[in-house]
Length: 358
Image (cartoon, rainbow, N blue to C red; front, side, top):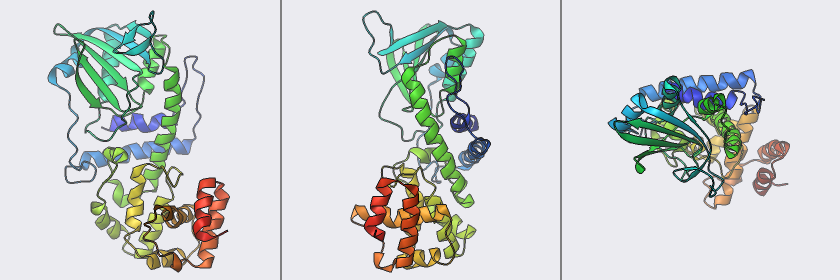
């Protein structure tokens, strides 16, 4: 599992090169370290999780059949395809199960082993939430035991569709990035999907956001957090409460840590990834009076201020906020509004002004 996580997280922090090997992204040493530490911690969490932990939570295994596994291990006559899903294949264009082929190459035995390894390594250990889309940019054809196996892979949407003699036999969940396969395509002088390059840049941001969120997470919770949580729309935080209370027995300290965690999300207060709700749910275990008292004892860090402003102002528009706004003091409102205004996000400012005043 760790090698998949390392690929997924470090991809957000490695210089991505195009076909001319010119850099597309630059990253800092701290970002590389953050992603590396996150991959290590997530690997340990997955290794220790089971059906009773929130990391697995009953998700079924994401397994491949014996014949598909054999094809990936001993298949021959391999052909690797570079695909462009956002262009319609014309009359004179070749397609791979409906997706336009923009480049293909027959592989020698060594290249076959490498390509098959990359496809197999992308398969997630458990089934979890993924995109409803399917835009494959990588394809692999292998011959095995008198049959033709085709693998159509979409990292962006998290699917690997497998065909046997042109009949679909599996739709597997995948994790990671296209970095290794793109490097192989480039070494074979095959073009990369233009839309995939843009998608990869967006995925870089997603993985950096996840790495920052994981780094801000209380240490006692990191062993409970698994890869499956990133894509889960709803989850039970009950198993998190006891270890969190053990790490931070003082309720005030616990609240401040949770505010800092909630303030380390991707940025938006609406339309954000559902995994960020974990911090919000745990914060709402406390009364408004407890929350307000905790954040008025000492000056807030930027992350704590962001988390507090997000909780108090971000919940109001639901019309069912559990916050007692009458307990927010004028001084606290002024401090949180000042923090939000400094961020210059129009949506956040509008929400904050609706709660904290102008």
